[in-house]
Image (tube, one colour):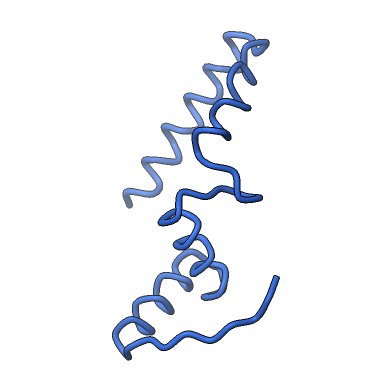
Length: 83
């Protein structure tokens, strides 16, 4: 990883700082996430399609009970996020 500098307007910096605080992360990490998303990269420069292809079938051996538990967790998480 290499250090770099960027110029931001006061408003851009305010929005970035606020979002980083809300997501409990650093501004640098948030900038990397935004860049990865915008450039279509994930992790080690893998495309989203490649990540999806590689993960296909990863949960195929899960029981129905495990899948239902995951569904319930996701449902509670969405409810919490909306509050």
